[in-house]
Length: 128
Image (cartoon, rainbow, N blue to C red; front, side):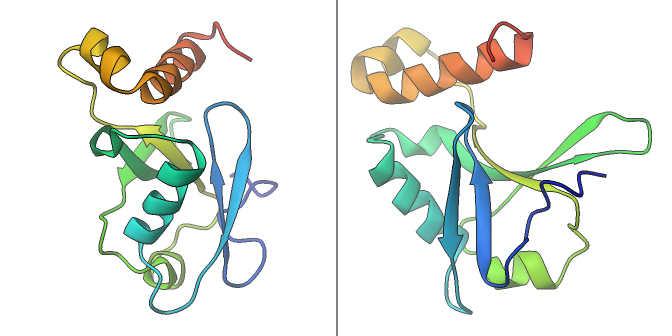
């Protein structure tokens, strides 16, 4: 378990891990949804093509393999944290839906393409 980087360390604060190693913290209340966090991240990261992105929960299964759970836009953050057993999980901001044409993504949204590049490089072990 990832006790050090637990999903919720401070009440009503969610830490979101970015592919570039940064961590963004979000305070939330009972009305805050995943979509609200996505909109804030889109603005902070200057992304235009948000349809390829999602907040995902990462956890390590019993066989030490990583598993991911994509969060739905309308899910309240309080529900995600309080109603489930996600202790020891990390919340990540990921490109979850690979574009059909990455070159078109580069033309349309260079910041989204760069994020995709970092994520793929990290998965292949060429980054960090």
